Image 1 (cartoon, rainbow, N blue to C red):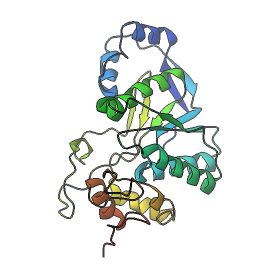
Image 2: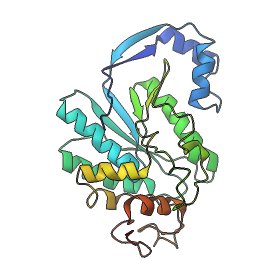
Image 3: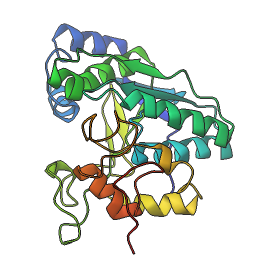
Image 4: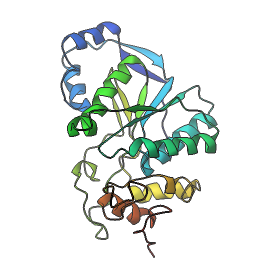
Length: 266
């Protein structure tokens, strides 16, 4: 898979950004996609161009974001691009995300001989489910784009397994269905998203791990589980019961090096 890394981005001029802030465009909870359309119809489209200096990515510690980070960094190195990589994480309801993301970062830096920017971890109110699971990401995206911390934000989110595949149950998130409207690239004057995996599923991700000989090195240190603490040894191995473990087994045939519930598909 060839990962696209643009050389420059277009941004609204400071005058336009001030108008957006003054009119409260960044104060509500609309999705970023909703904001794109609203803003386009309400402000004059004045832009300037600037080179891409920093790529950002939300690292969850999961298999999908881990392999995408690998591919991005590999391309930066091979093409000798003067671009930095900024890893970002949020401490969510189960606080293991930043820990496993840290394991992925350590592996990638050593494997690819590449120094990332310091890992930034955000700590929203643990009792506010909406903030910690959804809004924190939107809020920090706005801050990080507008402060210049990142020029482009990549996502490793994949599609659900095919609808006609009877070997796996249905995921509750219909927005990840193959038929859902999921643009691979979304741009506005204040944000630029690239989503290379939106049209592929985890079996396709498995092929990438195999292609780069990472199936038994990087993959086992990632985590995709949403099981409780008592089901997963206080989050030290996969529970083998939740849908995310089911998807992981469906694609890879095993969970990690430690799980009590894993098995190999024949």
